Image (tube, rainbow, N blue to C red):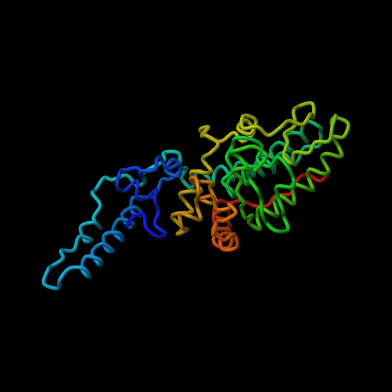
Length: 308
């Protein structure tokens, strides 16, 4: 009952303390539901079992209800179970506010080094925003090519787990807030490239880039991104994935939709395969509004770059 129809397999694993027969579930690593949510899933399963037993047994047999006991949680239970890397909402809000403050403060400078500092802060902010709106894995450059994104269609292709052949790529909707931020960044980048033409030995095609003190472009690697983000308490860069996975499920999205968004699927379950029955339109309509609300609640805003 815990894993039938649209039920959540990760919730079933946490409730029963058992793994499915076909192996470890990757989504468990990113999931930290509240105990009240887990209790609700358990109670609903128990109620369904009771109903099925009541209809299958003779009327003379009595069914002793068990749901009342299932509603009671022992005192002293932790508020959450599962992943220990899911940040609390106030922590994420503080990260966003700090990144915004750095961008606004760095805008005031006019010297070359100050321009480089502002650009790096702006790139860090835009990439962090992309991370918390798409669940991007901090393994490689978040956007290696411009063709991976369509602002007009509000879609992005992310292949952060494999090579550029897109063998394990996933399609993600972009919120209006993220589209506006990327449009601001494109204008900022064009102006910056014109100013840095002297430093560029070749055409720099990667959308995102950091600048060293000499103005030389550098690839946005995980180590450089961590250096420029400077998150408090230095958590791992993938806290965005832990946060999003948990938040999306607790907001009522089906596990199938969340797994497609996060890139969590087993062999034969890929939502973008040729014979998949997964509906991209329905998927975008379901998840985009939830992501938009999450981003606004976290305090993300579309910031313009420096006029060059």
